[in-house]
Image (cartoon, rainbow, N blue to C red; front, top):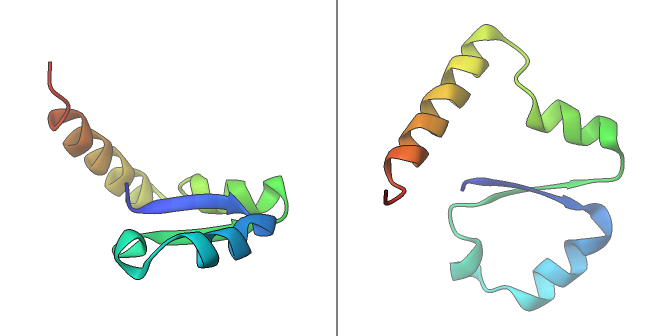
Length: 65
């Protein structure tokens, strides 16, 4: 997991409760509306869709059977 979408109200909690090491390699997106979630979560082009598909397949390969 590389990207996380959280409500904007949780930003203070993340900053207070998590260390730099815990946040390393993460991209946290703080949102206030569902529209913001959709812009971040859904691919906006065919190229982005291919990247998403590739990342999903790689993640599934790492899950033990």
